[in-house]
Each structure stands twice: as C-alpha cells, then as structure tokens.
Length: 636
Image (cartoon, rainbow, N blue to C red; front, side, top):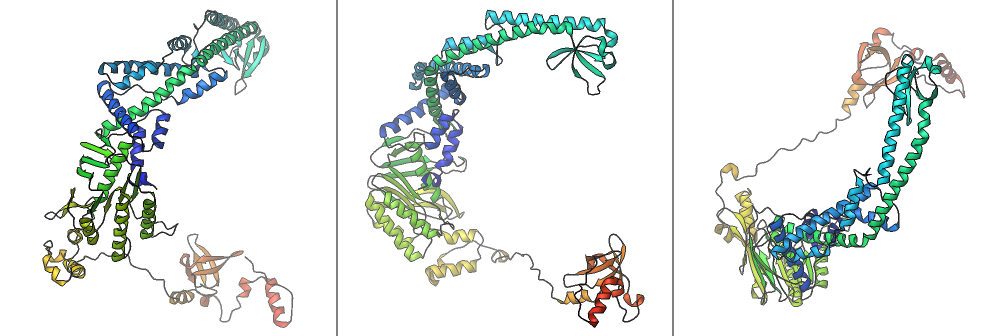
C-alpha cells in the first residue's frame, strides 16, 4: 500500500531530508519507517527534544558532509598515495570534528544527553597538525621538510642564473633580437631572434612565431643549466612523494578512529535534522502509550500554512474505536483524517508532532484508502479501485492497526454503496482496530449512532456565511450541505428546487431558504464557444475550373513571369503552366490572367504545337493511324 504517499508523509520526508547535511543521514531519512518498539520510539522522541534544546541554546551544530572522506580513507588503507587535495580534505574533516567536540562540550553545561557524544569523537590532533604544517593550497609546502626547502632554494637559484645568462646574451646581441625580453617555449628559456640573424646566435631553435619572422632560440650557454635543474627536480619529486606517503600512512593508521568519527557525525546529523524540523514546524514532543488511545489538541497538518490552518481537536480510544465523519464536501474531512494519521506516523518515526499537546498510541500498521485510485492502464474504475484498496486493508488490519478511509462506499449506486460501507465498518469493528472514515450516507450515520464502539463526528459549517469552518465536533452527525454550497456557488433557484424535490419530496422544498438573488443572477449565463467552420462544397472547385482555361496567357507572382496554361485548375486549386523550357504546377492564388486564349489563338487551335515536342506529336500522329510501341514522354 502507498500509505506514506496518500497521507503525504513522503513530502514530509523530503522536507526533513533537506535539513540533513550528510548523505548517510539523508539516506536513512529516505528509508525510515515507523518503529514497533515503544522503547525505541520514546528514545527517538527524547533525542529529537534534546537536539532541539541544544540548537535553541547553542545554535546550529557545525556538521559537515563526510561523503568524500570515506573514499579517501579507503585509498589510504589500500596503500595508495594520497594527493595534497585529498590530505587537505582529511584535515578539513578533523577540523570539523574538533569544532563539533567543542560545540558538544559546551552543551554539557545544560546537562543535555546529546552533549556526551563528544566523548566518542577523536579529533586525531597529531594528524591534523602534520597535514596543516606540510600541505598548503593543495600543494606540499616548501617548509614541509628541511631537505625539500633546500632543494627548492637551489632550483630557484638555478632558474635565476639561467635568466641572468639569457638576459646577458640578449644585451650583447641586441641588434639581432626581435624583442627585448626572453620567454619560455616548450619549457625552455629562449631568446626572440630575427629570422635573418639565425646563425648569429648560437643555440637550438625551439619554436617560431606565427608569421615565421621570429625564431625562439635556446642559447647554448643556458642549456648547460638544464642538467643541474633536472637533477634538482628529481630530488624535489622524490622528497614530495616521501612526505605524501608518510602522511598517507598516518591517515591509514588513524582510519579506524576517523571511520568511528564519521559514524557519530552521521548519527548526530540525523538526530539534529529532527530537531531542526521540530523548530521549523513549531512542533511538540507527544506522549506514547500502548492503550490504544489517541489525543490531539490544536493539531494541524504540517504541510499547511499555519495562517490558514484551523486547529483540530481529536480524541479516540477507550470505549470508542471508530469515528464516522460527515459534513460538506469543502469542510475539510479529508484533511482532518490525514492530519491525525500523519501526526501519528511522524511520532512513531521519532518526530515531534504539530499540536499544542498530543498523545499517540503504538500502531503496528497504518492503512488507508484515500483518493479515487482510478487507473486506465489497469482498467480500474473509481469504485473498483476503492474496493481493491479496501480489501487489501481488511486483509492486513488487526487490533493494533490504525485505519482511515475517505468517502466510504462512493463511486457506485448509492443504495448498494451504503450497504457496502456498513459491511466494511462491521469488519473494521470486528478487527478491534482504531479507524476514521468519512461518508455522506445518512444510513451510515445512523448505523454509527446505534452501534457500540462507534461514534459520529461532523465538520462544522457556518449557515450564515455558507462557508465551512474546518472544525470537527465529535459526537454529532453532520449534513453534506450540498444544496447550500450549490446555492453559494451560483446554481439557479429553479434547479435547486428541482434537486430538493427529487431528494426529499415536494413538501421539503419550502423548508429550504436560499440566498436572495437578482433576476439576472438567478439564471445560468451562457458563454459563447468557438464557431465550427465547415468545409466548402465542391461548387468552389467548379468555379475555379472555369476561371482559367488552356491556352490563357498568365502572369506568375511574385516573380512576374509570363506563362501559358497547359492544364486548368483542379479541385485542389492547382494548375499547370508552361514556362520557357519547363512546365510547373502552381496554386491559382499566385496566377493572374494576362491575355485570354480567345484573343491569342484561332478557334480549334491545336495546342500540342505549343505544349508537345515534335517527337511526341509524331508519335501521336502514328498512334492515330496504326499500332506503335513508342511512348509519349512529357517535357518538364
């Protein structure tokens, strides 16, 4: 069953997950379900309360994502060398652990139980200090070791000597230079020498300019420094790897402690996310019982705006195990039953509830049938979908279950639907479960009134303003107020009288008092719809056919070319025109009569002279006289 989706707990979990920082906590929230252990539920609720108190006292805890560090620890334990970037990520996590320890340590002054998780965190300060000293800006720092410092000083001195030598040659051979600076090309220090003076400067050509006028030459006097530089670079690389491997080994040694830190961080992140949600929803910790009693004072749906949400007063248990709720369609019956079940499920998942005061009972299942469930792909009608869900509920229900059903028995013949609704209520009553159902059937209200263990409830409706107040009154049956609502929404009085007479008889018409309306308000105002455009008959095609005839001289637009009609307009408004060297099809709207055929040709003129080739005319002549296998080919 899709209970979580139907009561919108899936939306609550999505909001809750946004308040978590670590992926582990988010995944736990996504998979969470209500607990069946009373002790576990009470512990989770206490954790939520403690985390909220700590946040209110000390602010949001300094939690940090730990997803990347898990992979880094695996690399270190495997024996591969960590990069400076990865080592800095390790240091960042250790800094976060230290800050979290400080945060929790401050919480001890309030004797908050969560504060004592501080003792389970190990900041591994030696490792943090070593990484911080030797790694800076995602690189091994110059002062990471004495040897590395000396090598890098020698490299800098060698580079300076190379540059000085190059500048000296540039000053000496100034006349041969294309520019007054030396540059690096392909990792080599070069001089920009004019092409025509290539042989004047000794050295190797490394590159040339895009125009080819300048050659970049590495002087021979500079090249000798590269061997020394290469030796120094090898020494630097070896020392850098030694430092990285040493730090990696330290990380591997501390991996177990860091994995324990990660587990504690994800656990605290999950707990504090519940506290953040409690603060955002202005929720309270509910009481928990196993005596099958639910009590909610000033309850509200957590997804609704508090400014428009009307507080709900609700109580069930003891001698009452089922409540039948009636009232107008817009009265909030569905929201009310969702509010009750959603708050109960939240509590059993360790979350605070959106009430002023609440006590919930432990339930072993949350079962519901809400919405029409119509599914064309599975060939399910509204009624079929309801019955399918209801049967599934009745198979699973037990004494410790909580059930809600919306519009019980709807979607079919009213008499038969009423009978099915009562049969369902009988089965729910036998199971001993707590249940809430909504209905419009008067017979179901009467059944609930006379049946032990069941009680009616109604959603109130203001008869003066003809608007729902969204408040539940337990112990009284309500009316659907369909006629009053239809009146408020603009149904004419004539239709309303017909409806009352059909439902309760002609004598009942006088007992209904409808809104006073003006004459123009007491009728249905018709709105104009689009006009159907019918296709034209074949007469137009006949008119078009007579518009232009074979032999007419016509002008083609927009090119303003002159042609002769060789085939008249067809039923689609298309005609064929002979142009110099070809025939084309063209819409009649792009053609205008230039000179009529009557003015150009004598009566009974043979147009094949114009439209056919000499070869085709000869074939036609032969066809008139005898059998021939020749084929007439049209000229395009």
